[in-house]
Image (cartoon, rainbow, N blue to C red; front, top):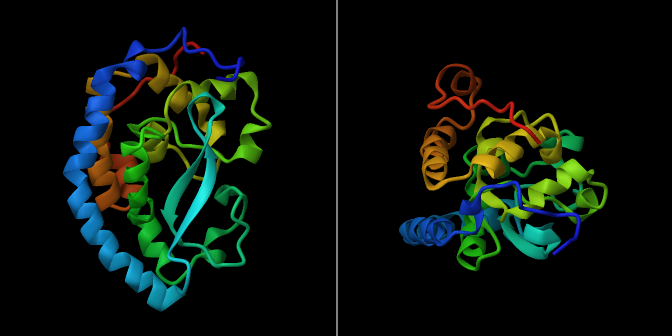
Length: 217
């Protein structure tokens, strides 16, 4: 583990068997529906947008460990694979099926297999690109003391106009107060977020919970 990363100030739940059990239980519940959905989506992507339907992107996980994160391709082939999406107009580079897949987070379904493999967690900070982590500040490195998540506070609440690591307060809050109950709350809020496709109305009026993100760093 990178010596710049310490989890001494963060919740012991991050290392608990309860969190891993929740990951496995949720993945097992979602596994069959995920496989069925992928069996529909992948052929459609191949027919409409061409090969490849899936791609594997190198990301940084817990303790600065690299892993390959699977996704359904939603960007055109000439798009730079390792360029943060907040740094350019994604609409100009999105495939024909990509907008719908991204809006409802269907492109991230293959990451369930990363959770089962222990590389990711159902709830946690989003995994970042190696070239971005290389320039992390000391505060931003704190994100790497937990397994990256398929969903989390940043994923369902933060503005997408800023890079992941610049919304650090979401991850610092989660790392400090992570618990089984908080994971369940985030999962509960993820469902309407995905169904409403992250609409402005949802952000402004229909949040299920409030979080005081002003926590010590």
